[in-house]
Image (cartoon, rainbow, N blue to C red; front, side, top):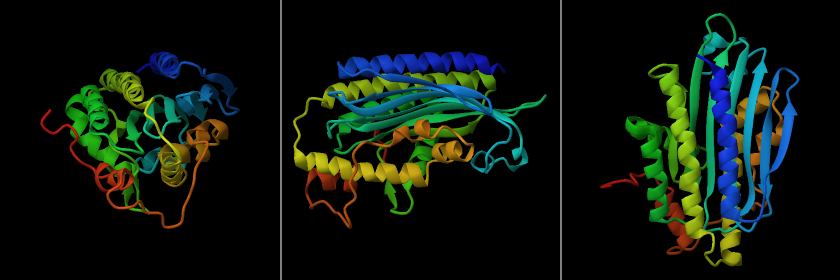
Length: 296
């Protein structure tokens, strides 16, 4: 096991993802913010904002150390409570300006404990949060997920559907993708290879969808709906997301942890879209877990 090989991959992944999104946007560039953690390690957060395509987005690399794993990291492994750790990963969230372009999220990470017999595991995945549903986009996304994860896809897809559920509303955050955690199957090299396939699949699939939708005309109605649905994204990240909870519990860097939040959000009391509208179709059809690759 050599975590430094993983670090090299992750820093390169950050560079590649930023280049892909900058090319799609055509104008905006990422601002780089390098930081150090007092307890050990640090990171490099890159944020893009104000572009014609990307209203706000972030691609954050971190490699941090701590004296004791926080509670959120030891729920499934209570025997590791109190152990020192090293955690590294790349976390990505992009909020496009056009409501017909979906928000996307990706994360790949490695945890390992300190000591002569370190315990390690990988986690990650990517998911898509559309404001207006398109079958073509769902197929593009899930085909990339299946190609990246192979035989694991059905299980990882189900985990994603289960994880990105707003339990307090019994509502899916989006159309899913794949999600996995505590992954050690096949040994370190095989698990690391899976991380690389997931990380590499995200950028190309998302860029394809952005290019397809970024020039779609929209108006105030679509923009209002987008901001209402962004509110659900905020609810999930602040209430349920393990990464957010881990970062805050471990004394992480708040600006980097909360870069995932969109710039403009609305909450309307008891809001429901009119029957038969594209907005209602998002809720009644697209935000229901289903086999998007059926027959393909």
